[in-house]
Length: 552
Ligand code: SIN
Picture: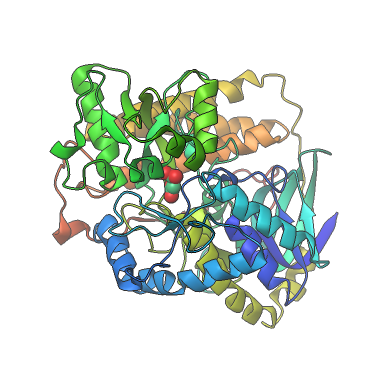
């Protein structure tokens, strides 16, 4: 079955929905999401959205803080544009009905987070992401020319290089023609054709054993883009959030940085504070520094966690300012207004990804990207807290003009659409060994946590490289022989994403921002003040007809 749209959007978080909503003025839109529309990392964002709203703040200061956190790898033009256009994007959201907290019903209440020199985080108590997601979903549902495809998992992109042998994957002539997706309810593969494809599929926290991310964050966007020959950069910069609840059943529940912004203090088990040893901003130092400090303290003391203490702050402030965090902690037996809560770092945000320009354009014409999946140059080597929702809003807004301009491009899709074959499962059979999938999945997440975590070394990275190669071979074999399922697709994506993180980390022989290597502990501006770019130039996994021609 073929579905034809002007614009296809992969993902339903802030980036995908913003783009879909705005671009629907120019043509028909299909949103593909592998779960239900509401399920995305955006929904779980607690802290808020960074934007200059106060008189004592300025876009220059926001840009300066962003670049300071990014440790020399931010693209200044991108940072300045996003910080400058941020307040207008936030006002649009408010115009659509998003309600952010105000002080006595007047000015917006602005929180502070690590690395910000001013209070500039708009929030809706501690459920900001859900407020944004809800607002955008309401607006999207009102647009008659947006069709939603829930439970549709993208398998691979269809690019011109796949149907036109004269075009090299990822080259200047390559362009996006659509994608194959698995309807995970009917288990049928469908072909989707489009003039523009917009990748907004989020991050990859599930590549690590402990993560604040939802189960959907399996690196799908980066992996499918890489297989199509798209440039990927800076994958070694994976952000670990310093404070996730330490409890076996809590699935690394996030304790927002705004808790520290309200005065929360990090302590050892014996009650001593420690952040003052590591940075003049103490508990509000940038995230890389706080996460590493906690890792160091835990290793030194042999304790399993550190503690976040709010008890010196009036009880109502934790209950009313953080109702979701308060209730969740209580459910696990901790009353944060009365006792310090146990916390540990966990994988939180992928700062690298699909390389895009300031309009979201990748190196493949007609393929755009925004949000966590992309590497726009806003975050550099470390993302400033609460800049991600802002990036999703801004870049997706800018992508609309670019996408609309591509609608009129002279017709590759028309010329090639009859050459695009239907998905063919070849001789694949149903798997009778799904334990292989769960086993490999578990192994990848453990090896990433143990060897490619907060602190790395050459030896650990080498080990990780050897193991991921073996696992990838096994996964590929499994992929060819058995009928695809959501689990096998996610496994393949997570393995490729892990490999890209390891490759980036192996290449970068220095320590900068989120990448810390014990064997190269210093920043090396002479050799490494640059991005680590990765591209599958052989495009060995790009096969038009994946099952029949595995050797291509
Ligand atoms: C948090 O609330 O601490 C998370 C915000 C973010 O990651 O930007």
